[in-house]
Amino acid sequence: MMIDPTQAGLDPTDLEDLLAETGARLLAGERLHGAGSSFSMQVDLAAAARPLVAAGACRLGVCSSVAPGGGAARCPDPSRLGDIASAIDHTLLKADATQSEVDQLCAEAIENRFASVCVNSTWVRRCAEILQGSGVLVCTVVGFPLGAALTEVKSYEARRAIEDGACEVDMVLNVGAMKSGLLDAVRADVASVAATCHGLGARLKVILETCLLTKDEIVQASELCKAAGADFVKTSTGFSSGGATVEDVALMRRAVGPVVGVKASGGVRDAAAAHAMLEAGATRIGASASVAIAQGAPAAAGSGY
Image (cartoon, rainbow, N blue to C red; front, side):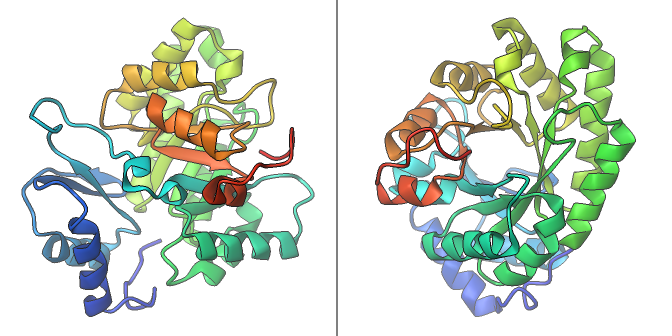
């Protein structure tokens, strides 16, 4: 869904002020990208962002084009800005989630300035309406939680969710096909959903379900997803036999390099765990204990996504 900044409650002055504040915290020589497309140049952030938003970008990301002292580009590390909340997808994916819980999720996301709320597609439209103009994105899941749906079904799910207001889509890899060595089928599955997302101005994250893969398969799947156009690779659904580990996050980061995002999800329930994932190379955290993480408070043991 294309976003008009005026419909999102932004006027050019607000946008310029926001970008000026952000730009003051970044190195000179940024790499600016909108969902579904990217380009590199030396830019004035406010001037460059305004036409991108007007053209339909629902989020703008900024990465340094060079590492401090030169060398390869690095993904942004939200923890270095002292704002772990901006790296969190505040998540509610349980089957019995109620409307009041979804509304509370959105209120918490606005209050804590989380990156997004991540909900099942039935709640996307409601979340988009509640979050309009807040700066918090709507993320949803497709092919969830098994990844075994037909490619056409995953692409349709993605399209409908984006039309309802989702800016980010987390799809589940076809794990069975991956473990069967059907790499062309896996690549085509990801590429199809990526094309749908990017064609409508949304980002794609691919959930590998790392607990079901060998280390070699994690590397292979990460590289395959990058080649197929994924914007992020993600560790886990939170609905299988295990969640994110520091080792797997670091492995995925090495596999995809510095530009593709890495999302750690499943079992990240406190600030210490979240910071460990960021240090290992994650650029996004998926969690239901987001408020506890952002506030540095302990979450209930064994509870949540």
